[in-house]
Amino acid sequence: MPFETSTSVQRSYSLAYLTAHACTPPQALRLAADLGYAAVGLRLQPNAPGAPQQHLIGLPEVLRETQAVQRDTGVGVFDLEIIRIGEQFDLEFYRPLFEAGAALNARAMLVAGDDTHGPRLAENYARLCEALAPYGITADLEFMPWTAVPDAKAALQVVEAAGMPTNAGILVDALHFGRSNSTLEDIRSIPRQLLHYAQICDAIAGTHFSTEAMIHTARCERLLPGEGSIDLQGLFSALPADIPLSVEVVNFERSAALGTSGWAAQCLLASRNMLADCSEAKPNAPF
Image 1 (cartoon, rainbow, N blue to C red):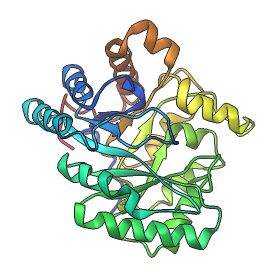
Image 2: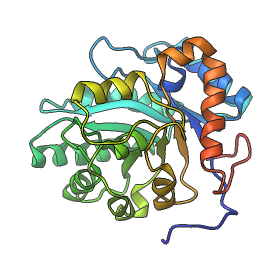
Image 3: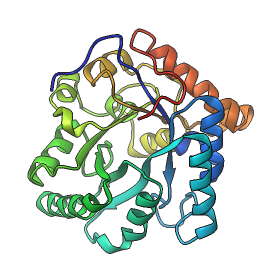
């Protein structure tokens, strides 16, 4: 399927967990509805033991409230975080996350690849795709320069080695594109069926940063689209024109100064302005 370039294509925007990390799941949905986001991303499993997350799994009252806000606002849950495939990957550990995704009608699961043994990583990724398939959820492998899947080429190699499962996906985060060895041609080479959504933000581009600096930027200090030097116009021209965008612009200092609502509103406005030459979605356009 060729990429759509017509300006009639609408874009939809999702409020990523990191952008509104202080919100509970129901609060994130209400905020998204107020600001004009179509969906939210939720982190229901931490990215490391003891790290921050949103608590919903095992809390039926929170699940019911979240579902009620979904019904009331029409805002969806697009993606859930996070599954890490390491050397000792335990698929069943994540079963409650799968079930929460099904209950929330989530469409995608964010996946990180940490296992440096390539064949085992691909095998476990294939197992994950198979386990998620009955829930109607895609497994979107995000390349990150400090992981075992450092760039777009590596992500595609894992998916291909896994046999190209029907619900496989590759997640392109603008930050990791700008700080990895990924090229625009690498992005164009990703098959369309693997691209379910992408993440937008900005930062100073380059491959000279230490692992510690890259992780700090990713988790604490991203810039608004247009403030850094990542080739966002080139990147989002290389991606499908109708791809849903997750607005992931965490910046602890600036969000504390503006408040969560003010910061999330600024992030959405900056994302839309950056992509003003592309088709714009109406507020709450469905995914």
